[in-house]
Length: 256
Image 1 (cartoon, rainbow, N blue to C red):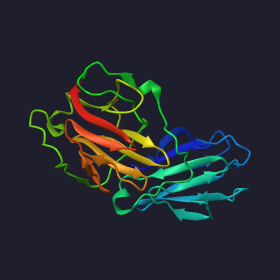
Image 2: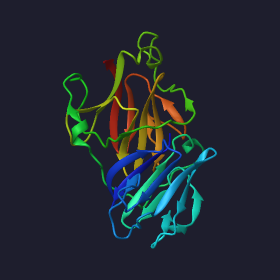
Image 3: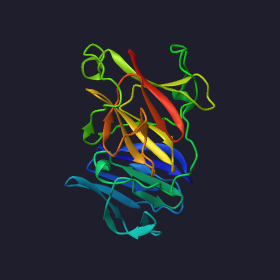
Image 4: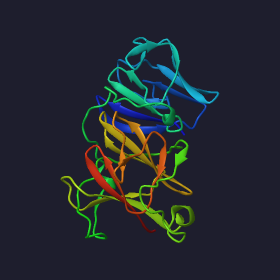
């Protein structure tokens, strides 16, 4: 499922999964995405699902609608497109198509680390791991692209693999370097976004048959166990080490 990531002046606000046939955007409170800014018209634009994709259409707004810094009337959205409404930005993320395109760092997002402290807690379960800090966490709904198998580390046994045990296991990541010592993040949402916006962003998606990491933004691809993940979703194995935006994190599974 495609998602819109909303920010204001490069500060993350919210995510909106595109699970409807049309999504209306504007200053009126009745809009699906309400942008309370005088630069935004009451009924500014709409996003419509057509065929296998989503189109952004300007609704004769006063100030127009920008996609990647260019004014548009109607345009098919591609993974990584940034839609601007005054000081607001909506980034279109469609993980199902990211494997066919190379992401570029978007100027619409600030090159700083976004942290959701409410989703981060100190780790006491794995004292043998060098502690650090979570780079970023956001949640939402997403359907990643075609997947490939991670062969960088030994596969899990049948009793501990994501395929057979997600009903009883939950994924976590624990940071191995950085300033936030002893931190970990529970991957109990469908989609968790990690990284530095504007530099390098990836998503970890929870599926019925395991956890998968996918590149979303940045010229440099994430690394798992010393190997680039590529542009397709990569299955994560227990104790894989992820390198993202200068942060090393260990992925592991525990009983829920």
